[in-house]
Amino acid sequence: MIFGLFAFVLYLYFFVGFNNLATVIRGVNLTEFFVFYSLGIGTMLLVMLCWVISWRSLLKALSVKIGLRKAFLYYWVGDFVDLVVPCPGVCGDATRLYLVHKETRDSYGAIAAAGVTNRIVAYSVVTAGLSTGIIYLLVNPTEFPVFATGLLFLAWLGALAWLTVLLCLALSKRALKKFASILVKVLKTLRIHRYSEGLSPKTLESLSIFNEGFKFFRKNPRYLIKPLIFQFLSFTLNLVVYILVFNSLGSLGFGFLPINFFIVVYFLAGAVQDASASFSVGALEIILTTIFVFYGIAPAESGVAAVVLRTVTFWFPLIVGYVIVQVVGARRLLSARARQAIEAEEEIEKEQSLVPTTENELR
Image (cartoon, rainbow, N blue to C red; front, side, top):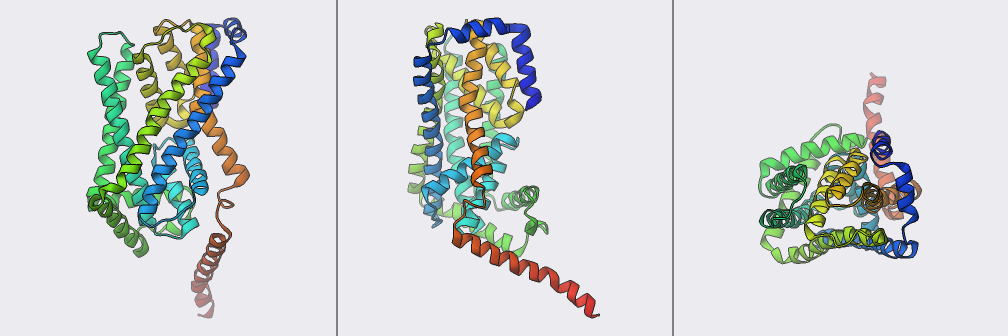
């Protein structure tokens, strides 16, 4: 991350110039900037809230009850993990899975089924939107960067592939075992040692519940309507964030920006950030600056716009997530009752681990 920031600073120094950047910053209308920038931050919060409501409604359908505030905090912790660790969706969802289980004591299978179903709904919306955007760009004769075309196509293939994987989890029992193996490895990475022995009978039981959760949603598709609506709202509001960011810099004289500009920037930035997480720092800013320049925005204005956009879509969620993890703490997010249950469980595990040693001493 630090290396990426350093590379972007060098890019700005050699290809834009700090003096030009300073001139552009002085020309920003601060009142206009703070109004639209604040709206952008608020819209970003709504994006996350829509995702949380979608996820929580699926948990509730499977009788996993969790308050909206806790769900929101757990989502943000998972989002922080996704932004730091480049494993799109998997690490963040595994973190949420662990936190919700410790809070509610419900089966991992039911919680995972709700999480994966939410991902399926979300990626269905994203894939449909990306497909529509690419078709629009191909049908309309307006020009856009050649390299962006290739990246957008790769993003479309990636979204389609990931959606296919998630659907396989929902429809194939064989895929469930592979998913469980990956999940166990993720939990090991998180240093949750109780899963170090692989697929235990309890894990296999969770897999069965996991499969039953998907069967429930297939038999009761009405429970997918609310998540679909809120995922669509999340998708739309995310695009609005990009428009608000450029409105915050309207005093720089960007003029009218075509819809294909926002399509390219929105999907490309989202795809690169989701795929590479913290490794996108620096590289994505340079890509965005290059795209902005292609659309006729001066290099200095493009550099400033790229920085401001990334503060809303990457640094804001990252910093807030870090504060929640460090100041509040994942363990403190748990209720007192849940903490007592965890402590009792840990005491039992410690006593069980001492039994073999005692027997050896008796021998």
